Figure 1 (cartoon, rainbow, N blue to C red):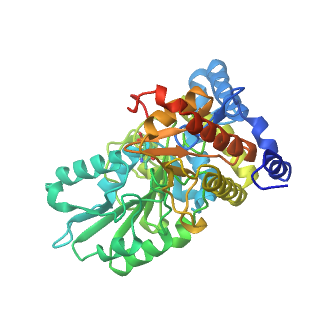
Figure 2 (cartoon, protein in one colour):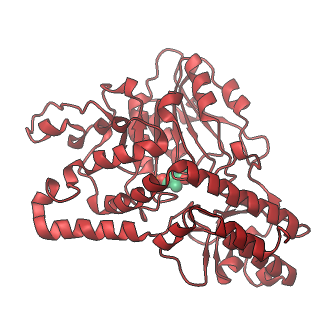
Figure 3 (spheres, rainbow, N blue to C red):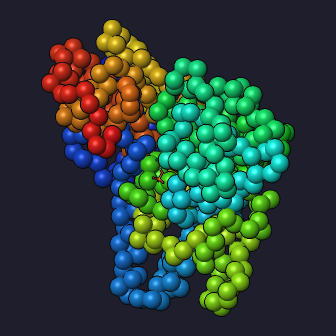
Length: 424
Ligand SMILES: *Cc1c(COP(=O)(O)O)cnc(C)c1O
């Protein structure tokens, strides 16, 4: 049997130990969902967890804070403990709270301490814009001009960032480094361990945005000595649109006064003393601000149970196999149609998605959607395809490439305009 036949994809699915988990999710009949890196799908466990929290509200009213299976008062901490294993933190180093951008604000407000010559923040020019906006406003709040004090490492090819260039930019003027684990467009996975070592050799604090790696890739945040990290839970972790996010802080920083205080950062037993002096929690919980959004946290209870059951290593292995297979089929089937594989092809540098570049990417994405394949478009010319370990199959990958091939052959994408949609 040839590797390029549907039968071969089916064989891979038959041998896949994670295949049964597809049944845990709500998939639309007749569509192939490859957008789990933007918004993960709903699982039955996540749905049930939300129903359970609503039931607790019905049953207990205010006492839901301390009663029921998942008392709300402790939920951010208990979920943080469960998440710790998938990011390689200690249980008390992770807390479920806020949103990605808000958590970045909180962490920079805490860890950016300009002193003497060290006043600059180092990031990269391909990073997610919200992170750049947050860094600029944090600089302004401390009285620095972002034009001069935000240093962005340049990309040589418009897709990836060379780690050597990042290290070369770690000068004695840099106070803080904030980088993505995986670049949101090209899917490049940065070497967080080495970057952290190099930053620390130079006395610089370093933190990572894990939005595009959490739930797809294992991390060893504590062992790598990463100072802090933050991420959303609605992409690979499937906790729902706008679900509550999370952050990690290395235990060596416990006890440091947080930049943005609020009463949920208190020691639990002191919080309701209502003292005007904050007794800050002695772990990552200190970084919380106000009352947690319980209804937007609830789905994570169910979703995380899947990740804890399967284990992140197995998820990574399947994810790599899916993206490797996709690249192989793209090279074999789509040659001559103008596609370029824009993601790193090496396993050690590849995140959870495949990034195809094409001058007509916008209309190809629209045409794919019309034919039941859900990708996403990223300006200027990118098609992101994320086959997700827990709910996509090798046959999904095979079929997607076949649909693309037929579409290009017949020019069916030409009937769509080549502009991006409002949400793309
Ligand atoms: C998705 C994403 C965000 C989103 O931030 P929100 O505050 O959740 O809107 C931020 N950074 C990166 C790298 C992302 O991929």
